[in-house]
Image (tube, rainbow, N blue to C red; front, side, top):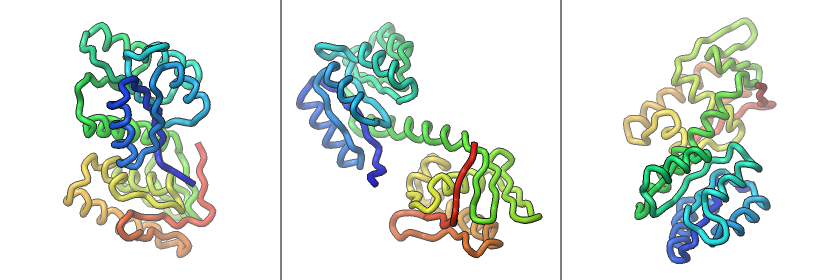
Length: 235
């Protein structure tokens, strides 16, 4: 199963569009490029996208109109506008429609990717927070109270422990990428934060040792995997 994020990219400047698509693909995204708003809308209806990057000034259907049409189909998909305009009125119009971000041309591709990643982390974080209870083998994890329960034993977790365990539970029996966890919880994936996360992984392993069937394993060069037989969740 391909778990990469899919981006709807609508840009009528052919050269810029192709450069952006190639750069996004090089960063691990799936990017579908559309040259105008009408094709963009038809493409959106056919696919399932994690985020939309829309040029404002496009033929046939401009970015604002396309965003409104998209919002009638999906009110939650994040939208970033690209525009050569810097007028306050245009920026306000974009946010009124429901834009999550707004980038004025010219911009660096690194900046675009940074903003995409920030929005996707926020969306993912909000979804994770909606889940209040996880089953982890014989454990029950209450994310709101930050309590780990097994039989008659209750362990109160620190905020960082609870955040990291929530991410592991959200990816139970799958690989949780190390950099993703660092950027989601510690914001920055620098050396010191990486060492800090290793310490918290060790602490979580100690908390989970009462059930031998549950373990957190290292996936070399990638991250961690929470092995939790029968893991499920409830809201």
